[in-house]
Image (spheres, one colour):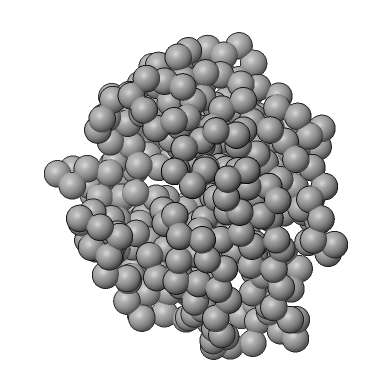
Length: 358
């Protein structure tokens, strides 16, 4: 995170025409479930450490770094949009796009502002929309003959700053959904965090939904439901919680406090309309995963194999858990109903983020 307020849109390079999405060629594994795991070795700062990408599929783990190389730092993220994989160099503000999951085919390499800190992307219409944590503007990178665009969200920031702290972008029924943390100039959550539903054709925010907990760190979208893992004030005592927003109704349909859960949630993944798994911040440096029944608010047992859960992902049948531990860099597959482990995969670096590839 970077507190410096900046909005910069520098000229990027579209390496191929994006009017039509190219067809992905066969990779080393094209059958069954494929999981992309982002490995991160933390250093002493944003420009330190290292990162890697591994492909889990066909019963094996393979190095899957892009041909142009991974950023030589840990402050990196990955995202999916329009069926393509994007690598987000948060420290340098560069968004790189690849054809499908073929990381040898780079079609986008754009600087979205050195201090902009891109957190997520979403493909809607003829633009790639970039949620930038360090900027007041949602950025629209054009495809084909479209023109560059941006949407000013500064009026939805904390009252002491013009930066709303966008931390994700999702497409829902032709609209963009953008959660914002709204931290003040001292990086303190004083106002309610928000979920914004935006019509990009008019640049208007159609729905503004206040959250009962602050600092959403992760989101998952399933139909009309958006689950948000909120860490609260980043302190040791639980003051965050899990919130579920019904986007169609524009209301919070479920809220479970960190006190009830046994820790503030940092990651979340739907496994059904009524059930999520969440990674809870129990105490430093422990993050543990457990299931939560949304209708009864019943909390299940912790998954015992991982004390350093970095991310969660659901492929429609299995839940995947990233164990962000340098001494045991692994991704686990389990039955989301029983919590039983059904697979274990070692990665090169400790996995901090997972994507289920289409």
